[in-house]
Length: 153
Image (cartoon, rainbow, N blue to C red):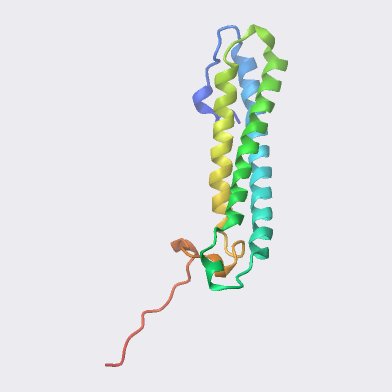
């Protein structure tokens, strides 16, 4: 599983053995997958409930801010959780003897944030998640094919 973080193949500090670093990356890859899946699932489910509750009562409601989209911000706590897991595991495995914790934690937190944001956005594009009345710009894979209209002139 250390192929997920392929750019971090070498330990950030010479005091860390290569086998220990591989085990650490494997545990971080498993944590990364778990955190991203849980965050994306929570984002999509909460977004779906918030989007279903949003109603249009008057014409100005169509142009009101679309607040359910803010649930994509759950990717920020997911990144923070991943950084905390990284710090805790790094300290437990390597202790104070090794450097490189800041680089490792920020890199994993950033990639967790970006992964959750991208997959969460793709998740809300799945048909049935966003109500049809709020789909202003659907992506082409999710549009139905319509036949060409031929006029009888």
